Amino acid sequence: MSYRKQRRPAGDVGRTIHNIRRRLDLNQTEFAERLGWLDESICRYELGKLVPSIPRLVQLLRLATKEEQTAILATLEGRGLSSSDAVFLAETFSATAAVSPQAHRQGTSASPSVSDNAPEASA
Image (cartoon, rainbow, N blue to C red; front, side):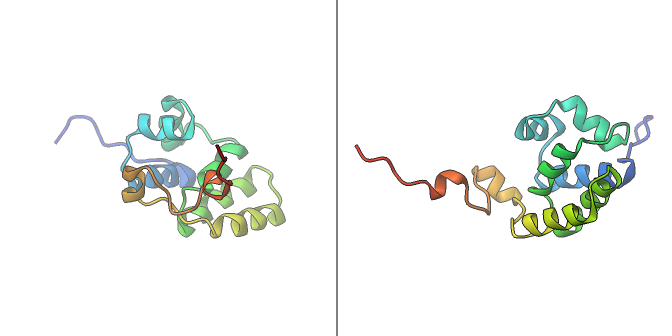
């Protein structure tokens, strides 16, 4: 056993971020790149030293499962988002399937992208 104690994510949102990242089979750097965040931020969020902003929490909803969404929405309400807005976000993102690790490795997601619905340009 290592002399360093294994650190566990602190707080519900920290654990949730950690769980999403692990479910997607990404390290902190890969997860940060995917979200367009700094990898130092991921570490601080997971350790509970920092709470993500509302836009970042909303961004996480797209990757979250139903259970993970519950923890994120509770954090959003704690950050001042009204219950009705939280319900709207929950309904909006509940229809969006979480990205599976297999889909991530293949570079696809379970939900269609904007380009999937765009008409093809004619030559």
